[in-house]
Length: 516
Image 1 (tube, helix red, strand yellow):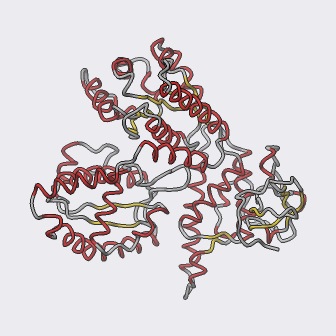
Image 2 (cartoon, one colour; image 1 turned 180 degrees about the vertical axis):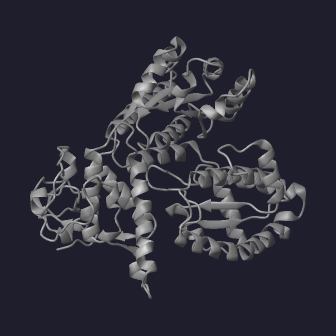
Image 3 (cartoon, one colour; image 1 turned 90 degrees about the vertical axis):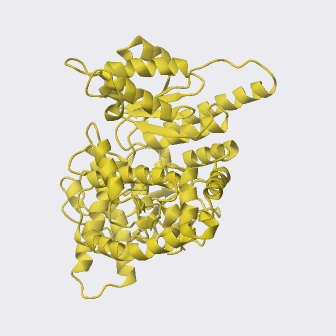
């Protein structure tokens, strides 16, 4: 099934037959860590209910650090599914996602293999527990009771419009960086808020297109923001659901005459009353040869008109390519009138994304590691080229770090819990930054920091970076660690300091014990 890059229907059916009594769910996201050692079948049912509520939580926000990676740091669940068609459909979705994860994986290292072996050994125990829970009288008294139970779960876990709006706005605020995106989304929210107030007053509301063009390099959060858009539009009653369906050229374009319209209509049908997100949409407009991309565009444009009150379409891709794509067709120009540009993440953003990845998985950086990581990410940002991976680059750096960390600890006879959780400077992937082959001596270095309240500026020592500090004005915040004074680091060249005013400000203002 995984021999090529496409899962065919017959392959899926064969896989379903082979695994028809198990549903294997893999997830890596902080909100669901409590399920990491799941052994109670009833708890598994509650997790399935959560999936029904939000089918996108598997992997969560990839750009913000919730990364799918086979066989490592996963919670594994197994559910008996033969009694429920609904669970079987969930299984099919899960199987497709797992296949995609494995296809995208860089391979299985020693530590991953050991972890996977442990998972396999514990799978039978977990599955037996879940089977007992699902087969209990409470869940299998009759088919009618099972159907009623499923309806109750769906009703109790359905996201309300008010909750969706609140979640969408909170998730937007929590995103690292993307200041221009937050500004544009704020304008959209203001427009929808006033629109709703006019409706409440019985006034007419203007008819405006709510289809979007997202432009930016990979890893800048386009998919994440698309999901937030879906929640906000649902929250304001523009759409009936907060659902988002992801698609690309392979999803929409067929290999022979007539197949493309069918595939495109199927994707649109799944997205109706929600959002259809088409990534790398410019690939639909390939020229020359027997290409059916234009058929997909034509089908999409027609459905956007037919379903103008039930479907929002977001197309995304590189800035230059998307500009040509929209200009290539008058129908696209008239329907896509809202543009949001996703800038590359800045050094401060890259550092915080990496830090969040560590925190989400129980790792911490030493002060030396934190300082040297900022140097690596600074160099990568300075020398970035078109197509810079942004959060994907950070994810790659993070995974390389974990590999180095594992190799270092594997050579030790005994390993402490603290060592398992601590990233040292020697673990960092220096090969990702040209001209750097190892850690710098930062013991006497200084970092520029400014209080976010009173603007008092000072120089921080190594011991304070990333830690909670207290200003004379009384406000507590974390000390930034990307504003290194390069003159205080022996041998450091090519490090550039940038002039975004807020980069030197303390971050994460909070009421917690502060370092003195």
